Length: 374
Figure 1 (cartoon, one colour):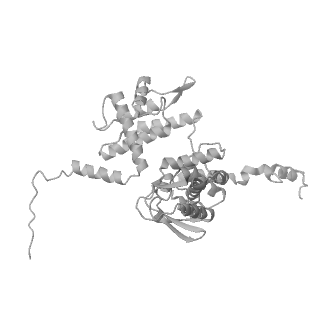
Figure 2 (cartoon, helix red, strand yellow):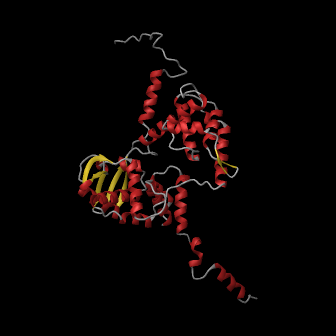
Figure 3 (cartoon, helix red, strand yellow):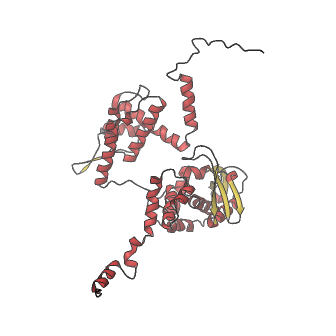
């Protein structure tokens, strides 16, 4: 039997047991990037660009210098979170630095950032430290306490968390009623109904759908397959149903835009010509906003309106929460419950007491007037 002799590596080839070398760190970062959704990567890059600019202006240091202290994260929050003071709202970012950040193109406009934006920027900073194997400054008690108290202070002074308007059944029907403009209308109708009836799909999931992800069961039923999504990263394909009007709208779109591969929803040009390029997530949001404007609907409309509207309408119609989450693929019950409960309350008898022929007050007076027994 032949045995291969394993020679000990040279000292230069030996790796340290307590840390990754440069090549391994780069490989790990590449895996993280490849496994992260495109929208999330863009968000990370934007947030890190902002951190780099703010750190340079505020402290004269870079992100690569080393781990940041908790005091830096606290300062970031104080610089950007508005607090009630002297009848107005104040934040600590000096006006000159604020203007410089806008001039650099990393900040859209002057002024404070929303609480959600500050939390997101701090989350990205924590991600950066994790990739560098550094302790995160966002874990400091002072940072967590400040964020919690800032949220409560803003809420007490009327600053509410903004949510997109939910497209429950009536506004959805108003959106669909505007889809009478030829090929573009057929596409938009199919898109709106798939995103809504198909389980409140995220815009990234809608634009990621390929023609090959579809399977028709009968004239009124299609199945579409989801792969990797925001909450399901294992790559296992899951089929979701489209029934009735949604299935018919999809059939109508495929008849005017036949294809055996490529993106399901594609750009439509003047004259009703269907291109080969797929829609972007931003274009899905603009479709919802345009249809809402054509329908004369007030509110803050976006692609998420379809997802929140599906959940709200399901609650309104008394669909069990488990069935709803099986369609939406929400992982967190607390996330979905806000929309679900809001929809359920729309159909609650407790919200319509005066509509019933006999109110509780009437029954109370009748019981007082009736003769007592015994």
